[in-house]
Image (cartoon, rainbow, N blue to C red; front, side, top):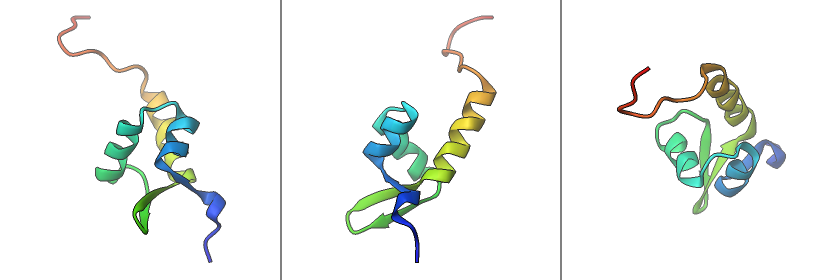
Length: 69
């Protein structure tokens, strides 16, 4: 049996990471984080989301399109 504390709603995931809720949904749709649909709600694996955030931070800030460095 799975521990419910290991799973987050999209709103909880956004609060935890500071990501916009639409970005969390995009991560779910693109399978970049482990997720499951329980009833009508998507639940995101806490471990998977934190691993993604760590890797995202390791890559550094994103450059805006059209900027020259």
